[in-house]
Image (cartoon, rainbow, N blue to C red; front, side):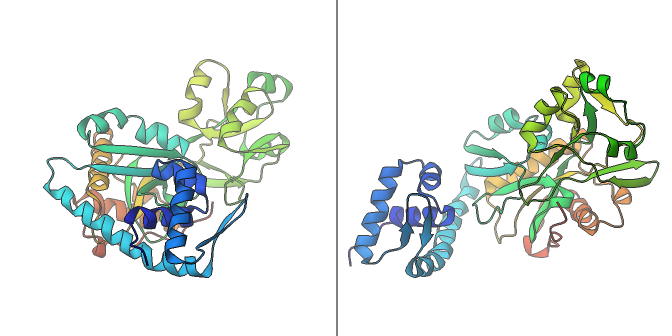
Length: 345
């Protein structure tokens, strides 16, 4: 058998984990044709087919599944070995991939982005803005940011900022044609723009007032993703529930009108979460510390446990874990409490 190269092994794993030549080529920074040739060469050297591919799909053969299971730990060990030399650098280096929902990108990442990159020029950031519950291990992300009630299982979580408290809004044009709701129950008589998570669940509209909470089963003719809700609200389609950070400017401009001001939708803190490992990559550790330090300056690093709903163990446990993390700069990962099971969308 001809000698196999690391690039061939890495290319195969990239394709297998993404089930796509295009996505793997983008991840590796090479052309799709070059990646196809690399895999073809690997299969010829091994004398077996590793992938079944059509114009629409890529799937592992039984041999390919066996090889992937053996290679993944070996490549992880290789990456850990390369990462271990980071401790000898003056400043950490490396590439960080993050998955972040749009409100967190604006509220948590945007304020520190330029400062972090200036402080750590040897670190490159790749930030994917996505509200889906991404499997960061499967999709090879180093970390993600989510509200506390949407934390992934078996993750280390650190609170890194306040959540975007949602605001109920409608356009002036819509309110000319419909009366303004006075209490949340009035929304049942309105056309509400609903949002569906990638999981398939439709976002629930919750409200709080003086310690009381309620949920309203709103209805409407439009169900959208995050990116379409604002244009639809501006066009007067209906009433929308949107993160304050995304609509504050539109409210100031008079293009949207805030509703139900006395009934505030509940808010929870944003958490950065990442897999439990024996050794956290140095680039990720300094990024976590940087976010935490910024949150301390802004006064958002301490979770308010007393305000966590007793009906939400995910939030309560996440807050306890983040509080413990904020009291010590580095936590041995094997001593960390596991993150709670994923809560409802």
